[in-house]
Amino acid sequence: MDKPPPSARIGTVHLVGAGPGDPDLLTLRAAQLIAQAEIIVHDGLVSPEIMALAPDGARLVSVAKQRARHTMNQDAINALLVAEALAGHDVIRLKGGDPFIFGRGGEEAEACCAAGVPVQVVPGISAASGAAAAALLPLTHRGASSAVSFVAGQCRGLSEQDWTGLAGHGRTLVIYMGVATAGAIADKLMADGLDPAIPVAVIENATRPEMRVLRAPLAGLDALVADHAVTSPALIVVGDVAAAPVSALFELAKEAVQ
Image 1 (cartoon, helix red, strand yellow):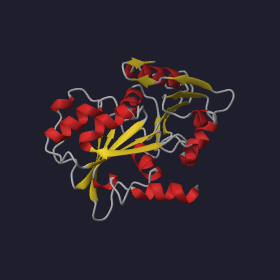
Image 2: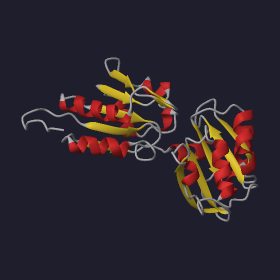
Image 3: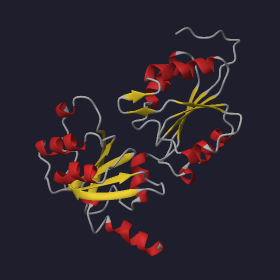
Image 4: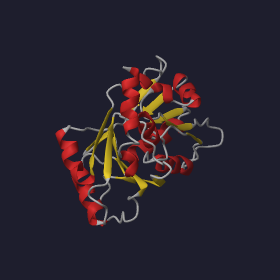
């Protein structure tokens, strides 16, 4: 892509993490940029409460992605960000969670840099850390887990992935985008040697009023997702931290505020 002449005013693309959904969990920098935005190119997982913080004159462009149906593919999103910036506009690229954790922020940053467009990244509270905090489910816990791994559950060639060692006693595995492939994920983990009885938690709509935390052994993950009609956004947490007494903290906290 040709770079603009030196005299042309080039806008900046801000890759901004919107966090797990609750607007109170936005960083100060993210809230400031949204409140002053000229153009916001946003994902479908950004909550309506956060989008409501945009000024009345801002142009809002949805590039929501759903399984098998995208409003705009990634190449087109990259091209849109570059085109708007080269036209002199500052662009907020607003993403759920953190831009650099399964947010494809790296691809967008590369496209902007290749076109000579300045990029700034505003990290957000990741979906994993936000969901775990809201559920009072520690991803690490002395005596229960000293390691954490993040994986994408919707990746192609799931059966070809080697997840050996990523989960087990003393380790926590957090699976993003795994609801639609929950059964295959459980089968894959058990085929790679994971104990079918190891605890699993599914956290749906983390930090939002409709949040649910559901639990089962790994062998029952597929049935858990189907029986409770779990939908995205949801995270799957595999490991000892997903079981009582650790996860019982969440239930105790709910009782305390009722």
